[in-house]
Length: 260
Image 1: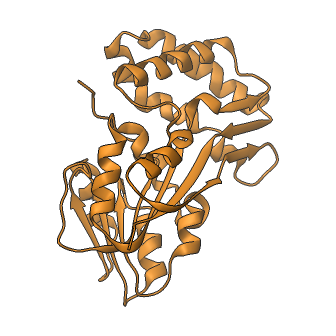
Image 2 (image 1 turned 90 degrees about the horizontal axis):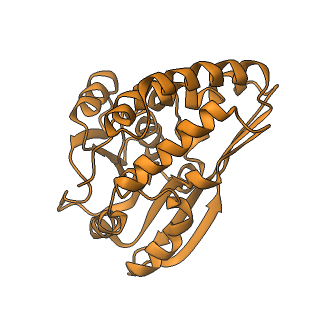
């Protein structure tokens, strides 16, 4: 049976619609209704609400009630609602113009079920917009220290043991076709951090922050000892500060239309 995963609020809070879900941002228009699945703390969802304006409507959905409570307490707009629920089970009488999920399906053991539910709450002729990673294609220049690579391998094996797809982004177009979507297109949205760029110091620390969040579940799973993980985190943090030149996280946005 698959575990559940709690995302790092530190990482979630620094994301924005404009920078971190660009394909969706380009599709939004005033008056649209949008369901944001796996909305987390709502950092991207609030951008969606601003984009669709007062005549639009946005619902942020996440199975983590703690994140939903944070979103409700910190973000408020008349056209925005946050709901606790699992997209693989959630039902709605409302039909949305766009149903989206960013970096969410990678944590679901049966993403095809989630996609079918997403399509079911999207109006005919509406759009599914899904953004996700392919962890096996991530890379750095130069290659990271071996201490980190051993822990990263443990991370991938832990994910596989839970039924989570390490190549989610690459498999999305086929899944879209499998559930009957039309006009499917995939757009590369790799997250690239290059030394010298303004956001390098923050973006390049993704894995330093992620290892904090993953320490407990990885250690509990026995794929990695906590002492090994903490050593990898220290070595990697120093390497990011002094040596890393370029970090590439393989990310793809996939868009498909619900038949009308």
